[in-house]
Amino acid sequence: MDSFEQLLQIRVVKKHEDGVTVSMPLLPQFMNSAGVLHGGVLATLADEAVGFSVDYHFNRKRRITTTEMKINYLLPVTGKRLTARCHLVRVGRHLCVGRVDLTDSTKRLVAIATATYMLLGEK
Image (cartoon, rainbow, N blue to C red; front, top):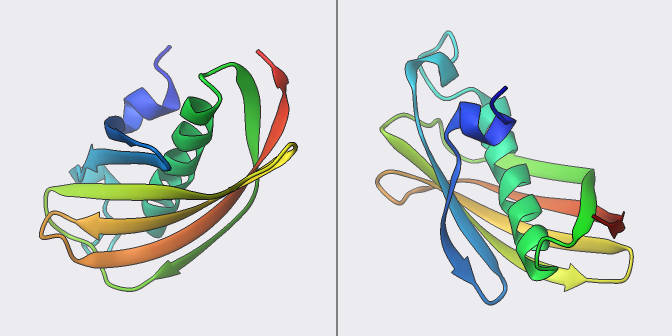
């Protein structure tokens, strides 16, 4: 069975010292009845950006899970692609916090998010 990230076609496009940039195509099945991107898809990409950032920070050796997330939707999203740039704000012994800027294919800031991840132990 495909992973959730594969189903959504989420890809890490760049690794940064303080996080990652992830991207995904905007497919018709991701749009809501108003013809714009469903908010849950935006939230998922933000969550994945922080998750990948924490995962890479620990060289993929830690199990992690989301404990909290907040998102502000700024603009409706249409177009071909969605990108999320995560900056890890705090990496602690038990919790990590990331801030995410989400942009559309024209580089408009469409949402901002923060997410907290808990470190669960070694893989």
